[in-house]
Amino acid sequence: VYSDLYWQLIENFIYSMVKFGLSSCAMMVCVSDSSCMALCQQAGFPCYDFQYSQYHPGQPLPSVLEQIGELKLLHLPKALKLGVDILMLDLDVGFMDNPLKLLDLALNDSSVDVLVQKDISFVMHRDVVRWRTWFLVPLPNIGIFYCRGNDKTVAMFELAWQDYKTVDSSVKENPGKDQNKVVSAMQEARCYPSSPCCFSHALSQLLLRLQVALHPRAPGRAAGQDLQVREQDLRAGRRGGAGGDE
Image 1 (cartoon, helix red, strand yellow):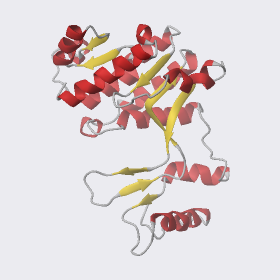
Image 2 (cartoon, one colour; image 1 turned 180 degrees about the vertical axis):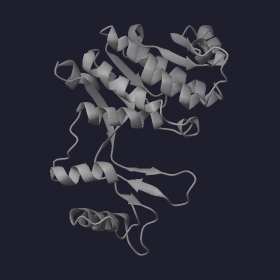
Image 3 (cartoon, helix red, strand yellow; image 1 turned 90 degrees about the vertical axis):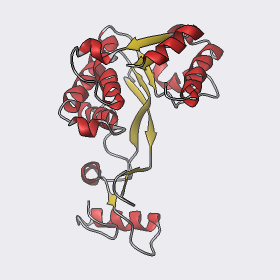
């Protein structure tokens, strides 16, 4: 717990679970954070003390984000093997209403294995000025991620974990690297449609691979104009375009 604001996020999560009658099945995970656990114990909050060193004795601690990546991709999915359904939430997710309402689709349809929020936006590069990647297709965001405990979801996380292990630690310390591997595993396992309905299958596959990168946009063009031009370039099979190189 690095600040009062961080602790307020924890309080908000616990109080929300109590408010909506979900505290009996909710848990806050403190990642290699003794201060977090001490505060939780003082407040009587249901918290779990995840210590990375317990699983890697004698090894130096990697970045917190890498530890969270291992927690999400390797350890939490162990519950899926036991047939336990999991709703994973990032700490910055808050609720104005009962979160169970978000899960109606999954809870009332046994054929749904995964329910996840999606983003339609861009991804910024923190080290390159004005660099950003725009996506024309919705991307899953595992900040809110419901997963049914069965063999299919276990296999999906196994794919994600094996892929994540190939990534260098210097990359894992950046946000979203664990999420990227879950998205790739979902595509490979076909847990969500990989082809948006507004594009042909061939173009959809091209978009999934090339993504549509705009390195800064062309002078005098709005972002929407660049996207329109880039879409035309992709349909014509061209790799270049007004916005830069993929």
